[in-house]
Image 1 (tube, rainbow, N blue to C red):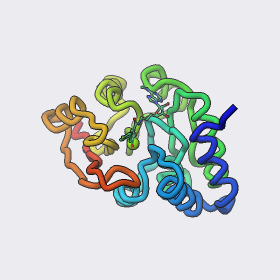
Image 2: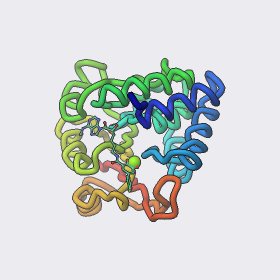
Image 3: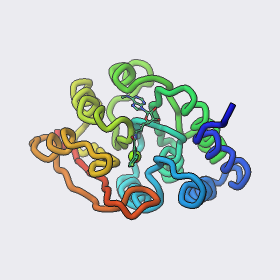
Length: 214
Ligand SMILES: CNc1ncnc2c1ncn2[C@@H]1O[C@H](/C=C/CNC(=O)c2cc(-c3ccc(F)cc3)cc(O)c2O)[C@@H](O)[C@H]1O
Ligand SMILES: [Mg+2]
């Protein structure tokens, strides 16, 4: 049977990237997706904005919603300092299997922990299961219609603290209108839009950065 797109992306990583070198894993995926087969990674242009937000914040505890092939988990994980941890949630077992391989090829298996399952099921259990108190940084890149429910769930579970930064991908394309309206109107957040482009294309897209005011 035919391979899947994530499996072909993984093969490109294994064939072309240097083991243990996150930078080469990122550039191989970007080159592959720009020149051979598009895939819904945050990509290099929005990835540069993601890098600057993470570097400025220097977070110790990070949550990612929607691992897919692990591109942004590697992007974020490579910037974390020793002792810092990224938990990334992915409910598709095939994507999770590919992402584990990509994260391991980048040598980030001790920094990035992939948890298989749905965000709605796992968010209420993160404290008791992983001893997490609050998150410093959260990257939302899963189903766009799930963003709003999950930010509300994170509030309810008291996993945000004064200054927690949430960064949401695709707030223009495909779009997350209900999420945008919520974070921009709510007095709980200070929100701003970083205009960019949809990965590997000229279409507009962007990231919304929202700081929880607590
Ligand atoms: C809802 N709870 C959930 N819990 C755990 N994992 C979840 C999840 N929802 C989805 N997932 C996983 O996240 C990933 C989903 C990502 C959805 N992303 C998009 O739809 C997306 C789509 C585009 C896109 C843009 C333009 C276009 F023409 C076609 C596609 C671009 C992007 O950057 C995107 O992120 C998958 O790996 C899925 O299995
Ligand atoms: Mg995305």
